[in-house]
Length: 594
Image (tube, rainbow, N blue to C red; front, side):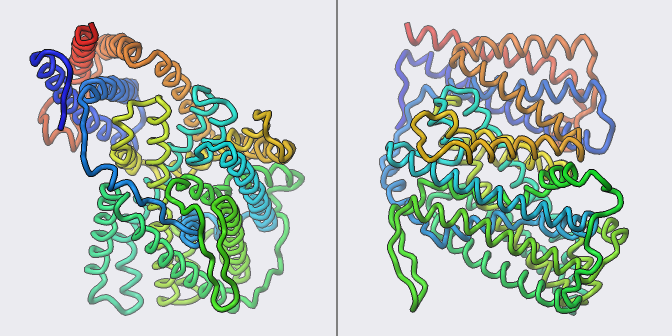
């Protein structure tokens, strides 16, 4: 049942504004999708940049209007509370499976083989440092979680620790939460992109080599259909199927780890675990320490998945039973098994990473041949093990993409929902946070895969650095502040070192933080202040689009709805329409309040 205080005419006007804003939001979104897709294949020009910024401005403006228009309606569902009651279902082994599954992702099959052959001893040193850093960070997480539980405070994800230390209206908290949402969304987009491309374009050929040529295409399309269907179902009915998600994650993780260990043992045995020749590459010379730091930052993407566990705090049992028949059975509280699951996730994932790296090095593949392969792990499996070993690695690769996608998607929705609960976004957005996360994944999935990996790595390192420093800022923290200081500064150093690998990624990351700071300041104005700012911002963007005479034909998707329209003309008039909608909603809300 819905109701809105005020005259009937105001209610109808409010609803009309919301519907028109929603339709315009969809059109802006399609325009942004087209421009992002186009900018990948061509050199950026002023018109494209103005259109992208204008689309983002229009989407932000319309989001405020939609939130105000529909947020005025009180919507009540009688069965809502009963649907939300029994959501604490994850125990120790489920969280461990989520941590290991989200840590061992598809980047392992691309980064490890190439890195260990190219950098040799530096690569293994970086893996060890990243492992130690992650274990220490898991210790910081567990200590902060214990403190939060004693204080009776919620801890949905690591950014909650920054909220406890700095307050929920702190810029540090806002940046850590936004960065974690963006990085999880980006990683989900990468996993989705790499899964579908691999499944439809590469996997059928691998099945042909293994003797399954009769059903290869059919199997590939069925797998893609199941993945897409599961993603939609998981997004729409996540709370109702949490138990199934947990079971699927456990089964997938066990199968993936078993396949990887089988391949590692096969590959290592084939090479006799011959590690002769391992040392410092001549290209590094005396810059060993610098190379170690830079490479650690590059490889840290392989290790941060353990923190996804903390984002599922509300879904975890207060007390879990750990059973290892017939040797061990014990009940353990949440604070303890969270710590064990995070640390064990890092240890298990790092052991597999290092063992796989050693197995790859033992067969001494050619660096030039690896560099020409899109997925080096598949090239090595096929060259040294034939079609069946390549099929084993291919199946593990697909499973790794799924076990990464599901938890990071859920975590991304949790982070966005937390921003709504803390008042940065309207609460009505929190109920459908998965929709905005899916839209962001849809946009990002058309991007460059290497860029998605690098930007995820950078944003996670910066966010984890801020989170790890939270105990330093908290006076009540009694576990010692030297460890959080070391871990936090290490994250910043590793994140900064990415500049020497990909300067554009660091520049894009800094732009993200500046945008976050701007959005933070705008949100501090409140809903009415945000609306006034949006009106002014849209007028300025429309002015720029007019002055610079932006002219670009509609892209593939938008042209299906607005055939023959010029995007520049669309941007000019649509931004002015955004201003009219914002101003109308502002006036109606003011009348209603009076």
